Length: 56
Image (cartoon, rainbow, N blue to C red):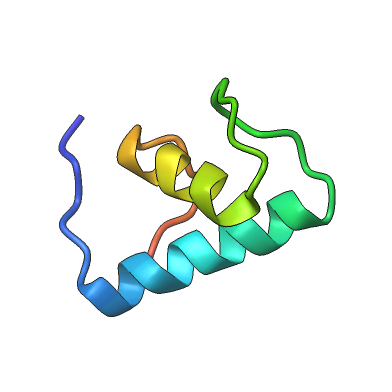
């Protein structure tokens, strides 16, 4: 699987949308000790686990 390159704006939007979901109680996709939704979303993004994609 080829990892897509995102612009800094797309990356920020993906992480913020996922952080919002996590703050509302969605189950995280990676095991982490982090309690902050933004940090959890960043870890998911780094591990390529966020189920979002950017359409052109």
